Length: 459
Image (cartoon, rainbow, N blue to C red; front, side):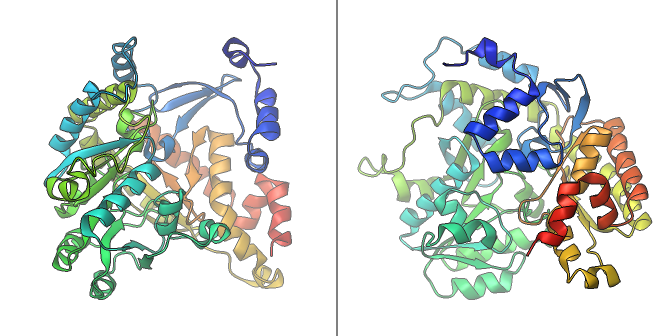
């Protein structure tokens, strides 16, 4: 029997959990349950969300950068309502609003970026960028960085810099090499071989643990790539659209990519959408003839609802000066977190730019770790971030998560409409957590017996 939407909206938390365990990702549902992360959220507005029991939370995860304009921004939703009744996608035509969104993106992106191809996810934008680079340059190799994250589809996965996600799916796409992040010498050395189509890099490594490169790194990347006939691809999926205090993070170095990938907040977090945008020169080499213009296509990319949301989201980001607000509030949050770092030995480093901030923790040392054969250190590296996130959510109503490639780092990535008062609540909550939990083991004991059992059972 099919469940209707009316029935679905009335389901309680247990029923939703049971559905996921039975028909979805069973192990993931169990993992979320270990830390009480399987709540049923029923309402969202701005930075705040509410669960089915009426509890209020501050969302400092922000959809991994998908909610720069906040949850359910009213202007974005009202804009979508204006196109209800129009065809959402008509393949035998040129979608009007996709053309407008492409124009608007060309207006706000750096350098000579102009031609757009719309998709549905960040990984799809990366896949399109890789294909464009290979066909435009007629070279095979794509370089990425160790610790990077570009997605989990096959091409994007081949460039993502964590073995844990790659090993089960090998062999991966060939001619994908990795070099250290923030290392221009390594880049130039690899480019000398002459077979590189493009170097793809995040202006700030997100899932790698919020790693900010040296000043001037991206501009140097641009110059080195061009010196050796390779394209520079900026993956701005998480860093773009105001997140770091500029419209795009590569602007901090005045760097001008040949291709840029944008997604997440492109639709205001309402509808899945993405784009890769490139220069006229690269586009014409890749798809500039009638014979080649249909070599890369998609069904839903640039659909009317998604394009309308994108047009509205860009207006909100620009008109409300969200990049400037991200810079001001990010500096405010970083200063507060630095004070916590000086106060507590559990914090190893605080880093970030704008409202993309990571909090990395020290690893356990001493006799107890030796007696456990290093099991506590290994478990801390994998679980400490999730334990802090668990206490933030379950005790203090703050939603966060760890970074995928470095689970020892908790990310703070709220919507750019956050207030100082909301930031103060998060900092005060962290202060209380660190004051009450002086070590990983103590936090594990208080957080979850299942996690604690895993400490000593993990190989």
